[in-house]
Image 1: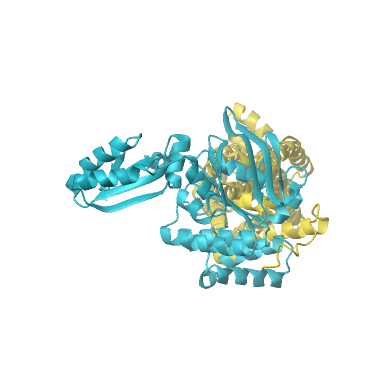
Image 2: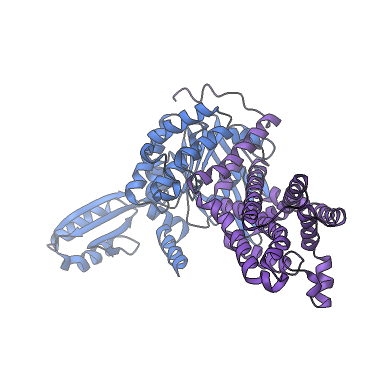
Length: 322
Length: 267
């Protein structure tokens, strides 16, 4: 199978901190690899190395078969990059930003304009094309940024946390765009802190923590690696919550959690479920909701790293505002 | 769109010289086209020197030179120098803004000449230098300033300022790449350029300085540059101060060009 992106043993230090500590990854042509991990896990460093913006201290990587160190110019002709912040010139209009990139890529003046208009229309920015981008909303900037990275019709696209800080609606809009690109056969490497995003978009997922790949596989494979399914029981009467905790707790090894009127517990043996149901029935507890499902990526992340991804994001945000 | 991957064009190994020039010009265009949307930027660039010109002429002029007219004739060349030196740091500010906003990364991820983002910006800034020079001379003439040498002197003064500014842009590149924010660059600019121009012969005759300050002023490169521009515009010795200014510029390039290239390669 042809790999659009291959990396082996990538290492990058910043002083004492190891941003990347020996990362291997491959992305087959036309697939979307989700790189999942909390802030500071090394995701952006990996993207910057693969996009030829940063030299690794050790290891090698190739994009489209070209070595990122010795054939960086060829790599740059194949890739598109959309960073964490929208990298557009705020003083220029949306159209001018795109025309500039077109001209830099060697398109004629008229071809640049045509391509710019095409992409503005595709990203719902046609009406705003003549306005300076500093007047754009966050979602519009991200869309323009993504449009800018598509001018050269890249075969490999790097999306570094493309939806961080976007409202839910802009996020789902961007997901649609990414799905459209996938349909066109573009290979995508997408980093995200949002487990849901990886779940929604990625063919394959790797999980980063402290500069290392700690797990990889499809979303389903990852969900089953913890070896557990999740049982959720919501009693009809909230007063029965403690009773449910007790019953479930007696049957499973790990302590159940309670939140939002619901008891959640990891289950390793599905056979305990009928037993729990019988016991609840004997006690006269009626469940308004009783489900056995695969663990979510959130729970997988917790099991793999010992900490929740979203918690970490929340604390970091608080620190940023403090 | 669906045939995209199968009809991939052959990938070039490097950028041709012609493409390098066209990319540089595109990026210069990018820095200049902003003026179309934000004409105030040109005014920003001009309002400070005009304010300095008015303040110095009408507030200090009489006290320093006995009459505002005499002072204007003396000080305008110095103000041209001060303004040109200040403006070299706008290259640093622009570059630093691109880096902090991520535009620099985008440009570096494109298959374009590595140097185009730098040279494009420097070319645009040189255009702005010329604009500021012409504006300040023009405004000075409305107030009564006269070029008493020749048109060649005027052109020579502009050329000398552009050469010095280009030499200093190497330092600007280093500051722009290294500073943590555009505000820091502004602070560096203010806290170095202000004392340098004020302790030179740019705005006042240095003969009234205490002797230790005169010693410094004689070394200060701004003094030599101001003397050369003054000579070119209103007469006086040109050859020696111009030569010293060019030597300083060469020194600047020798120190900062390798440093700038090293920092640039590392980012």
